[in-house]
Image (cartoon, rainbow, N blue to C red; front, top):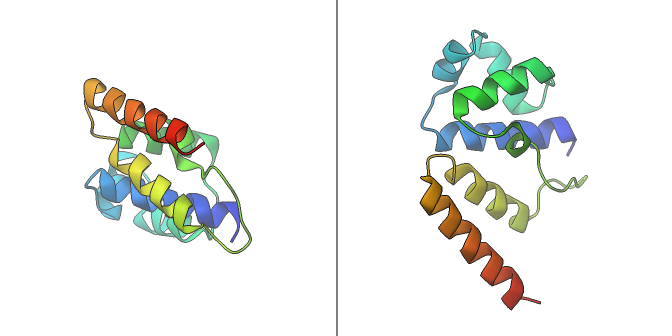
Length: 112
C-alpha cells in the first residue's frame, strides 16, 4: 500500500470521526466531492495547501493525516487501531486529550 493510499485512509477516518460527509468536507474547503473521493482512495495526492485546508476543516493538525509507518502490505492491525484512536481525539477537550496522553504514556511504560 502506498503512502497516498494510507494517507487517504487516514483522511477518511479523520473525516468520519469529525462527523462529516465527503460532500460537507468538500464544501468547507471549496473542493469537489470527486477530489475528496480520489484523495481518500489514494488515487491522487493532495497539495500541501489542500492538506492545510483539510486539517483546518477537521480542526486537526496536518500531521494526523499521515500514517506513522508505511508498509507495502498496508496498515497493520496496530496501525489501524492507532489511527482510529488519533481520529477520535479530534473533538476532545484539552483536558480529555491530556488524559488520553497520560493513559498512552502509562501503557507505553508498562509494555516495556
